[in-house]
Length: 166
Ligand code: PNS
Image (cartoon, rainbow, N blue to C red):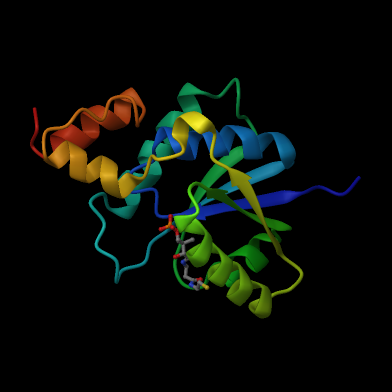
């Protein structure tokens, strides 16, 4: 039977419970799931590439009984080139509110023009994770709000430390 390789790309700055939920669900529908951490030097990240990758790997190892077919690889440059090199069959993206749609629709359309063999598949965010975004998690934490329910515990402590909020 054909082996399906799924690629779940993103910035993961940092990984949230919403990302983790997509990882759990995506890993059930593909044979191998690659989490692609975009390096993107032009974008200002709070966590550098190694930190973002380590935070994801830590969660994979904590949850290894649930997700054993998943690995993390950082990538630079075009997503579709990376996907092609990996021989990925599908790109997986999480979809939250309607506001995500425009951006995702455009990106999917452009990516399909670059390589029509690789389909983008969307997983709807679970109800509990509908509104979680790394951007707001960082902002809320910076402003001393409680972000415990949005991110894994280990990420919470790293984020507090990073923002000097101990
Ligand atoms: O989690 P994000 O920040 O929404 O992820 C966006 C990401 C990394 C998937 C997107 O920016 C991307 O694919 N970057 C790689 C560069 C690329 O291929 N750009 C063309 C997109 S049409």
